[in-house]
Image (cartoon, rainbow, N blue to C red; front, side, top):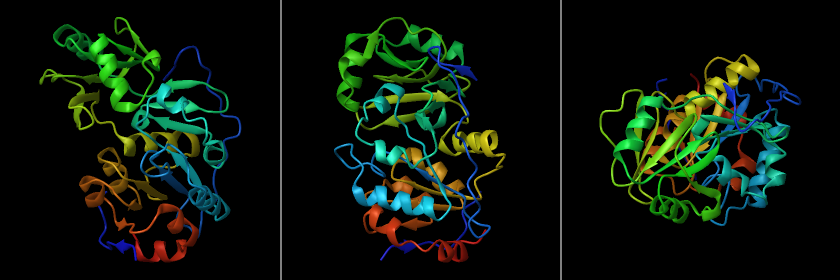
Length: 290
């Protein structure tokens, strides 16, 4: 049986010449004056260890659509990393046409192909890191650029991205995030940092950002929806914790990190697909009243 915590948690520019399209964006209908959106992390949540979407998960997402919820994907993956997911078309077809990448700092129109940044690191911080640190990988205009072969190799191994997808070149242009090997300068105004356990590096992003902010921005822009009070969110990692805590219903999947578990109101003890196939939205709303 899944465990439920009943207490209430407290509350642009184009990339690479891409164009931004709003064609096909429709507002979901409100379900019982409660939930309208279902936000999903990808890796460890919707996708299995092989990078595929189990059929039970796809069926569960389809069921949510039938109940009137709009599934939205928000992932920490970079653009090159997301583009490598070539076998999840049936899953994507059920979701909102815009995918939030890099925890919401990049918005990809997967139909029109355009990308846009909604946040970036201060240029002064990027310049300081490049000057002080020998091994850095940056996401610049949607491209992955490494300052050294060592940085490119480490990033490639940690994230399973082909080495050919990482350029070795000067980091130039708007930068959404930096991955710094061997430590980053401590005094970088306008940034926030997170340790990457995958290979002992430091991730730098713009201050005040995260999945909760990224999704909030999208809902305001697309649906004039202020806040996350109509959102149920699913995740498993440290970078999902803010979204799980801020959403009306935060759900941590099996095998989640301690941070995600602490932030969530519901903790799954069975596969996500099995939960989605049977979840009673009415009961969820009644037992998780704001």
